[in-house]
Length: 287
Image (tube, rainbow, N blue to C red; front, side, top):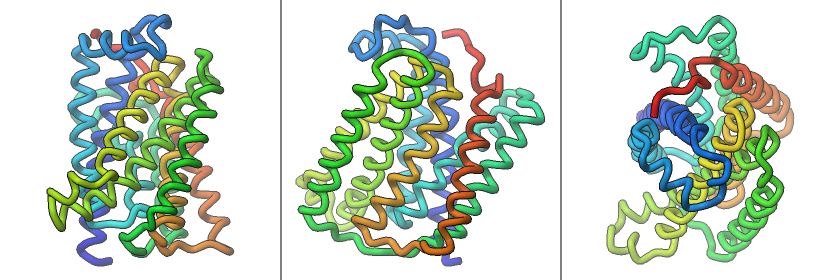
């Protein structure tokens, strides 16, 4: 394993830990917001007054920095799936720093996610593609993704577990898309900051990130973490791998390897569901 790959993995795992902890804090604040604020600017204004939510945002910003660092040295199809480790890493952080006791089932869920993630990445064996993506490819890919997210948003406007899961999937797709554009932006930054600021990708990245963040807040406010988080956890890496292969021509294995890849995804999903039920992730805190 090369030093560059090791750095990409370390940066991605640090980003996953930051994101996982931030999501839990954001959910605790979002669940306290009234239902009437869904899909309104009032929801964001309400959340801005809550200390727990602001702490979650600060942690999420740290995750964004680590993600950018990981994508600057690693492939999209390697980095983004590693962010599925955010829930088990959150358990470890809360156990060490907050002396919480997640329970045996939660640890089993975390172990299942870790095994599933390792199985997925070993089976995929992602290798570098290229940085250049033709404009036509971007137009087609972003149009398809925009239509998919719009359809999910329309289907997930009703509160409850189903709506939370659908919006969580939309948010995960948005985060995966944001990561794909971010990889191009980081490549531009290495060449020239002026050239980066003049490109459309940097503003597309910002817009996609804001939209995904807004969708996540509505998903967390709509239903329980067990309904939201598995959808986010699965949709993000799946979309990232697809975009990595289609746009950046990342080299991954298919054929026979689809069997362990599906098994890995199933373990990630099962572990995510189990972890999302843990009281340490779902209990409220004062806001």
